[in-house]
Length: 499
Image (tube, rainbow, N blue to C red):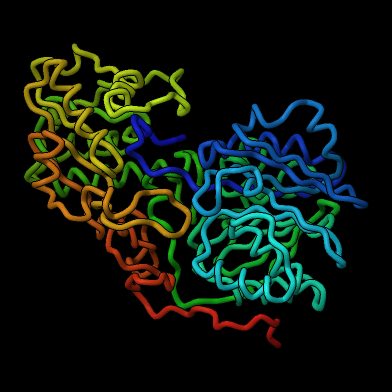
């Protein structure tokens, strides 16, 4: 997990990670395995790989981390130069193995494997239509819905047309890595809510949720897959074709990818995540900087934010006035040390033990904070319990003042598109003001980053971002929720439409 949260169940949880490779003269299983390691932060519940050797499909999917899900013999059994992989944190569907991915299905026109990052909002409707047409489902996840709809279309149409008709039927957030026999496809939803990129590696090509997976394979990022685009990798690994299947006037990029989920060394929608986080930290100083003795990040989630914040503080005062050369500022320091050997499987059956988890995972450096005014930087506040415990830890270590600065706007609504965030009842900002939250967590001051600052740091307009979790208005048609745009949702039609 790239973010430093999960100190007692108070952080958003990752979505999923997908990858696909097509290689010219070597087996795909091991590169897929390495790429999944690079995407492990996006999901820890299960891991899987599907390959195709030109004659038949091979699959291995298991619960657990990548290193636990595969043994050497498993990789040896996954023959073929093309394949896809998946790491999962469940945000739709149950926890059992039937919802682990890639999902595989065989039908008259061949075999399919499908890895999905995101969430459909009309999965139940499409599932009911397919079930009425005779499709039998083995799981309650939306990935199987996509697979069955695509399989149905492939019975009557070529590959590109079949994918287009599936895209016209499903509604919601998705980045997909698909195998159709020995052909690997990458698909990104028309609003580009979830990341997906294309890269060149030795002897082939790769699609992945994040460019860090391409780096791990010693590859070169070519570009992001465009919203509504289909990328088809040549089975022999020598090239690829692209098709712009659906176009929209705006996008709905998930801003939280940059704030929290993605690895800082990944490039998403043409922006290096680390630099975006530093810009967000600088914006945080400009909007709500406080003159304190030291600024320190919550590891690892707040580190880039705190670095940018401290840099901006060395240039201007909290009032926005230029500082003199060598005029000081706020010292950047690592004041919280993370115990990296306490995993997310640590058992916390009671509230007391959940609170103890923070002390197990984080320990303050007394010399950094004792007798000083301290600013703590984190990426988000969800339920508020972790922030309360962090403030208490730093006070107990001798800090005279504890200020809290957050590199995102207040999270006041749930995410329906692949982030396991929380319900409104669990979100502290859903019905509490910033001042009330400050009192709850015990900080001397608390400030969040504004939505406009986030958009500016990302170099995008608010209209091209998914801001549902911080506005309560969504870019997709979610039942019972407001939208922030005219939504082009599909109409009910169980049969493929003509172009």
